[in-house]
Image 1 (cartoon, one colour):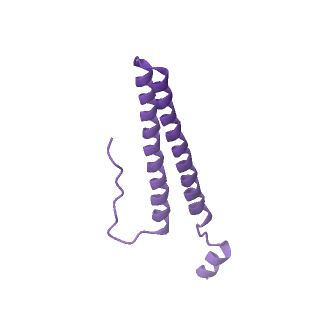
Image 2 (cartoon, rainbow, N blue to C red):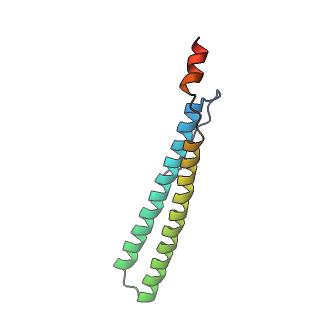
Image 3 (cartoon, rainbow, N blue to C red):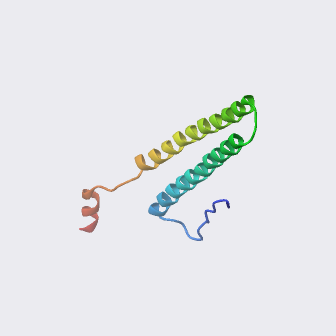
Length: 102
């Protein structure tokens, strides 16, 4: 798995492109977190298939639980980012655009 790359544009970007970039960055973070959760699941499956004692199983389970809680907290941060972007977009009213056309 490679690291996500966000390229810097040579020219200033438009508001539309900035919003697109913010949403893309949130999607990339979501993808990264899904890979982390998948790895935790694979780790659990591997340990379960091994001949280990209950204490070791519980230790790995606690580790996975901690990771799930950390991912859940990051999900809330991403939700807040998305809401911030959504709530702070400027949409000109119809009156503003019609007065500029006259």
